[in-house]
Image (spheres, rainbow, N blue to C red):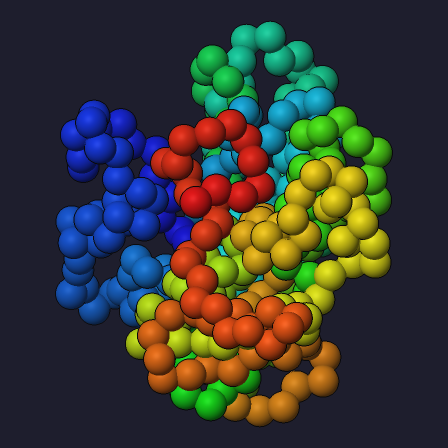
Length: 327
């Protein structure tokens, strides 16, 4: 989502810190507009202006989203930019430009700063966009904020799913989260590369224009983002646990990390794959369920039981240390 907040005490008391969703809902009211220049405002993965420009911003903060010992700074910076570009993919937008705002600690060397910029430039080049500006400031911790600009005459939205539509994924939603767990544990794992080297599914998003009825990228977790899509569309969804794609060895790696593989699959974020609904039958994506009229998200487990699931996933304002799953 283009509005990503880090506020302390602005919208709620110190005794009861609101969730990320609650704070965004409150600011939706603050920023409500009837401007003819705004086609899509707060509530989707990106904003859309009347001329078709699509805008989003994302931030990666050291200690909250990554640790420097996870990988080279160039890799971490590229990954941060991909997170922002994924919002354009979810809107079916073609990337045009990126702007970067960096907050860097005084201990960061010039060569390390250049590595960060090389990573950003690499992410832009991969999607045919250009880095056109930004800002540089000193601070206590490394923070990478990326603003992305794209264009779409037919943007995808979260609010369009219809009862009977199929629910699809453009890739595995839990592999990256499993990789982050491995990195946190200091464990060598092929899944770590799934977290370190994500891809914005730009081409897939472009191909869904005029096909998908609703779309969101999986950044906060499959359950949480599916709840977002369903709430925006006024529908529910039923998904099959066994149908959700995952990398080879997923269950064994999760158990080696003392994790429930199903919970990692359903709740971990930062996969940056597309979760979408469509009335048509698609062969290149994985169908995992169906849109239903009953509100909420329901999961059929391997035994066939139908269980209502809460929107578990990543919440910036939940307590706890760096983790792929919160809620």
